Image (cartoon, rainbow, N blue to C red; front, side, top):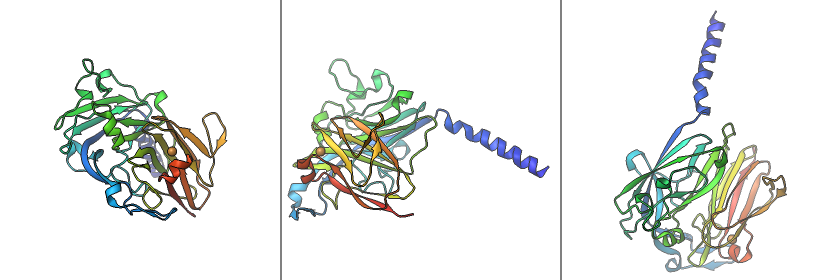
Amino acid sequence: MRRLTALLIAGAASLLAAPSASAATREYWVAAVPATWNIVPNGRDAIMGMEYPTADTVFGTVVYRRYTKGWGKPLANVPSGSGNSNLMPGPLIKAREGDKLRVHFKNLDTAFKRPHSMHFHGVHYKPSSDGAYLPGFSGRDANVKPGQTWTYKLTAGSDSVGAWPYHDHGPEMEASIDGGMWGMLSILGKHEQAPDREFVVVFSPMGKFQAIDGRAFVGNTPVFHSREGDLVQWDVMAMGSEHHTFHVHGHRWKTPDGRDVDTVTVGPAESIRVRWREKEPGTWLYHCHVETHMAAGMIGTYQVNAS
Ligand SMILES: [Cu+2]
C-alpha cells in the first residue's frame, strides 16, 4: 500500500511538473542606465606588449541593465562564471518556444537624456512592441523618453528557436549601438535540453578597438568557463557595420546544414547558436579571425576544467 501511495504521489508530481514544458509568461525588468565604461581595464594588450592610457579606453555611455521587479534593485546582466562583464551585453533574455515575454523597459538615462527603446529580433510581436523609431508612424515604444517606461510584448514561436539580437532602435540608435546598447535573446525548442553553460559573444567595434562584449584584449575580454562533459552553448552576434568570424581553438561544431566547422562568419545583426558536448580540457583561445580585428582586441580565452 505504501508503495502504491508512493507511486501515486510520484504520478501526481510528474503531472504537476508537466506544465513546465507548456507555455509560460516570462517577465524581465530592464533599464537604460548611464555608465562609465573601460574597454581595456588592465590598460594593456598582453600579446603585443602594448600599453593603453585610460584616456584612450574610458568613455561615458548608456547600457541596458537588468533589475528586480518594478526596477527595484539593479542586477548583474549575466550569471557569474558566464562572463566578466555585468553591463555589456544587456541581460540575456531567455524563453522557450511557445512562451510569452514581457520586457518592462525604463529609461534612466540621466547623463545624456536621450530617448531609447528596445527592438527584438527573432520573436513575434505587434507594431506597438517593435521599438523602431519612424517619425509620424511609430509610437512611444520607439521613443521612450528619460523617466518613461514601456512594456514590450513578445511571443517565441517555433521559428524563434536560437540566439537573436536586441538593441536600441530609438531616435539615437547609432550612438546607442556604438556605445553598447545591445544584448541577446536565447530561445530553446519546446523539448530541447537547456545547456549547462551559455556564453554570449558580441563582436563590435568600440572606439579605436575591436571588442568582445565591450572589452578588448586577453585579460579584459570575458574568460568563459566550463567542465568536461558540459553541454556548452555559445550565442554569437555582430553589432555595428563590420563582418566578423567566430573561431574557437581545439573545437569543431556542426552547422545547421550538417558541416563540421571551426570558424563561422557573422555580419551586422546576424546571430548564431553554437553547441557541443565539451571533451577538450585546457585553456583555449576564441577570437574573431579577421586579422586586423584580432590585433585590435577581438580575442579571449576559454577555460575547460577536466571532470
Ligand atoms: Cu572581427
